[in-house]
Image 1: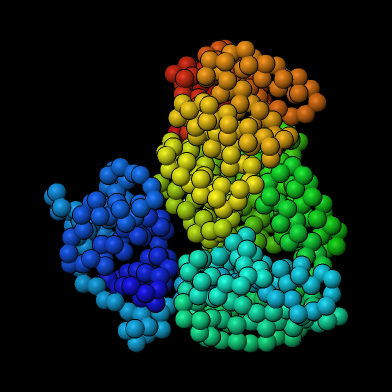
Image 2: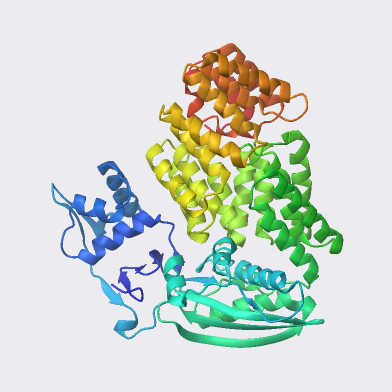
Length: 573
């Protein structure tokens, strides 16, 4: 099997190289494991494939039970129809139906349904050239990601290939894409020249190349033009809405855009210091161009993240979330077609206003505007999981990771999904991959500690949380979680000391009451636990949206006071 092959059956096309399934021109939301399972059955057709053989191929690096195979078979049948997969008693499964193999070897150019934009090379001599090139790369990625029939790798992943010596086929294989866009930018005074090339990744074969020379203020409009041209070259059909969105750009101050890119760079680092630096860049971008909607959206995300306990949680939600909402609404008022702005507002609607229907509507609007916005899928997964819609949440989490495979955040988030859906071994496996990807990412060690806590492995939990503190020195939520592990492991005096320290610390900085409540749950002191959960409701703690799925609350769910708190927060039934 080579990466140029696809299989067609009925109305479906299975892209073997990209591990993607399409119906017509629309990509179907299937997890990578489900697609790999389908591919194994299709390749073996008409022969049956044993259960053990499927488990070894699809879950080669993970120890899973047969139930995982059964679940994925069920999901496949719901997606493609019952008629295609036959169950053979004590033998396994067999794909049933006529299959046609297409691709380069069959005389066709393989369809391009996924691509990555490599960092554009700076050919100029100005000191900000690299930053300008990075901003142009980001703009092209953002525009191409608006095309629903195309999977476009996010900026975080492709920037790892800046100045790389790897070949294009190597990069294409690592990112699981059909094609690559490469090129260069050169800025001279008020003019900019962009060279762009489209390459079939596996064959390292050029499909298209073009050079553009434009006024600097029109460079983002130019990126729309480049995106439309690439869509035409790879024969991806744009919907009328997508065509409109790729034709409605406006001039923007290029320096404001560079400030915006720097802000996003620091935002994804997820520390209190990086959030504050990002805020400064977004504010400078707004000062430079007060009508620049994206900068307001970035500002909103920073304020929200400062109040989010799983990031930094250093600010009281009531102090930062209204600022986030104001910035998000400003962004939407300036540009209602900006996907990022709708995600920013959705986040506030969910985590602060506890308005699930309004939040979901904003998330859906965002992903309609930009199906390739990884953070939109990532945060939408939070809403779905908090509502108990575990399978839908998993699809969104996996989609976010597909779009940004080398991002520590997206890898971490999938581990978080497994943690909150109580699949602890899968969580450990995914978080181990995240550590391998980025060993200095402190949040990963914290989440590993949370998983070990749920498995009752308290020594390991404290070890991982201690490692997290080495990177997240000012994060009081980690301190609180360590206090809870002390409580669960019988070290009551240390748990009491942790509570005392947190209460004392709360006189000078924000401490999430929810976290103190969790320590009391661990101690079995339910009255005190509900006292602090009540305080959390009063302060609109972001953690309360996970009341339905946070297994740490299991010991008090049967208490009559628990459904009262759920009702006050508005948890969906």
